[in-house]
Amino acid sequence: MDFLSFTQKDNIAYVTLENPKEFNALSLKLMEELTGLLEEIENKREAKVIIIEGAEKAFCAGHSLKEVETKTEEEVMELFRTCETLMKKIRDIPQIVISKVEGVAVAAGSQLVAISDLAVASEKARFGVPGINSGLFCSTPAVFVSRNIGRKKAAELLFTGNLMSAEEALDNGLINKVVPSAELDEATDNLAKDITKQSLNILEIGKKQFYKQINMEDFEALDYSTEVIVKNSKHPDTVEGIRSFFEKRKPVWDDISKTD
Image (cartoon, rainbow, N blue to C red; front, side, top):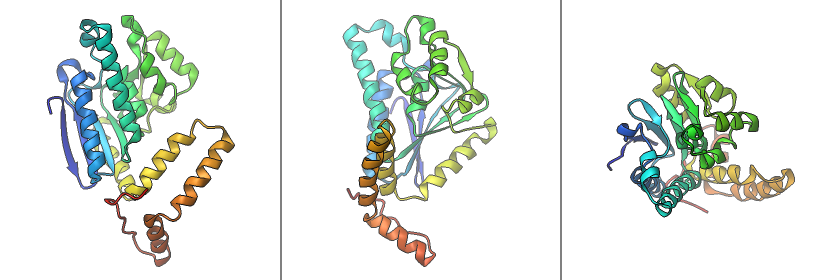
């Protein structure tokens, strides 16, 4: 891969964006590589958590403005459709995706943080959707940013182009935790390890249920979720989990074999 590096330790996959000349901008090639890698991790089912991090000075500076400037309108459509495919892949895979943020995460970089299931940032991190400063309103980043934080704060970021601190991002719900830079690796790994104790099969059920119900009307969500939990109750990993609870032992999950 030209724009990514990848390692795996136990049940955690570590994916690093490697486009330092453009501050880890989401170039077309990088997005294609990332989508392909996520699909590979999804299909192998050897990892339960994926940690996405940046290299060098930035987590991710958003889309490549050089590509936006030089491509035709049809090619720019391909660029943003590729990003849409990437975002959908992050949402659809069974693994829990954590963004580990050092430096800036702006425009589509903030979108990447917002679409991730969880996010941990260093106290030096900065977030924003400053496309308006260059005359390109952050329409696509606005979708998931505005679904993470309050409407007024989202509007402020989008219309001013200003950045917010890691503490502001925490207070407004964009990230889960802020730690000193020296503690970022450990804090992110600890969060990931809290998840890897769980069954990948049940994480998959839960992730799908969580995002599907979240925008439903209350009792529509409850009706749908009732169907999910009843079916979940007879899953082999659930049977094992309940049995292990009564037997006072750790459950043994069948993570590799996917059961619908």
